Image (cartoon, rainbow over all chains, first blue to last red; front, side, top):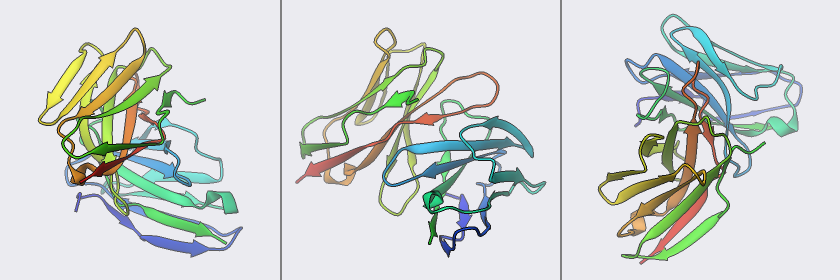
Length: 114
Length: 113
């Protein structure tokens, strides 16, 4: 157990629907990062939050949004889902905003859009 | 635009020998480089890192080498063990503003007993 909790582990939904993925960071970590991994590809950076504020944005679609709450948990909202959104979504956390210590990843949420 | 490239999708090595995983990057502003290991059904696990001011960092059986002029880094595992069989991701980040750590596509390492 890495200390980063992602729920749900698996999600199957239909095209056009909206889902919310949840992440609880490791205790004491202020930064949360979201990554998408599609079909054995690398991890694509989506977005980073630090202590409730957005700090960096990657290739996140306009249909996707995220937020970090006062208790530091984060949610990734995916709307108007398309088949191509099927992927593993990872959340990671770190004490600060990155650096040489690396991130702690959760075990991911596998999203299947049918 | 792939800023971090791992050109070998897979690598097979005999137990006890050296495993060398390679990574190239294009963004000269990257100043932190990291390696992660990933087992099936788990998230990536941080392995080792190096700052751009160094050219080598060692941690037990794992050593990362950085060649800034060539924009190339490598991870050496010696001796390789069957438990090292996993997907290895190279990652790089730029220490300006927020950290956007960019990951390569990964190299699957098979260590044969």
